[in-house]
Length: 257
Figure 1 (tube, rainbow, N blue to C red):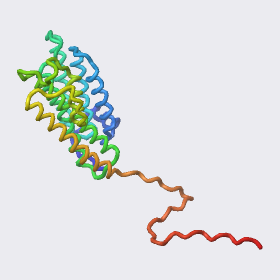
Figure 2 (figure 1 turned 120 degrees about the vertical axis):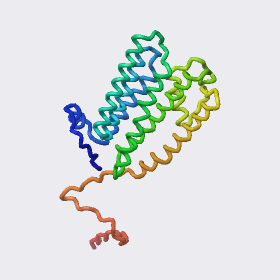
Figure 3 (figure 1 turned 90 degrees about the vertical axis):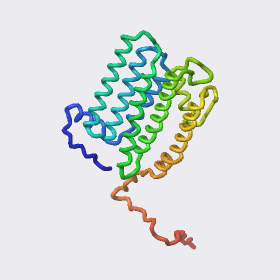
Figure 4 (figure 1 turned 120 degrees about the horizontal axis):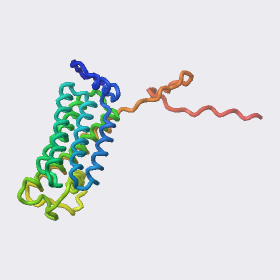
């Protein structure tokens, strides 16, 4: 596994995080993604839910940068952006009176979520081999792709004159997450459908992208995943399977007359 060149001197916090979270360990990022998804899919449309959502999305981005060992100045810049987004979301809650998120809130989440797959993909391309952590990273990209489309649909719902869905005029974030992932996995229950042609085109693009990603990228990575071989003990002879000699049965003991 290659070592990422990072010549910028780390801060005390960065040094601690890099020791605590090893490189290319995307299992932690995947767990954080599932926690974020469950929270967003099950929370009511409350003002403070938006603050927690921004915090979780920002934390996911920073965790992906840390696992990918992005350059430290990129990590610091992302931390500043996440902090500014969090402060802005808190300010909008304190100043604003509406419980409904705005289109700019969804655009902010598109930027936070959409940057993480690019970072993970660049890190995976630097790897020489394929192991379980590579597969975890590929699954993270798949989940992040679904979340990104969900926020895009929600932003379109706020900025368009007509609602995004044909079945309801008051869709919530859980509705968009549900629609995005059943579209990406091509389940397609049909309880939610896009109203206009542009929304249907985006849904078709997501379904095509999701399926091509699963049957090509993830399938190839799983098929090439290396498995650690068990080392034999010093007293155990190592089996040799390189010979082409046919297998013979051991001689039967002679019966006593």
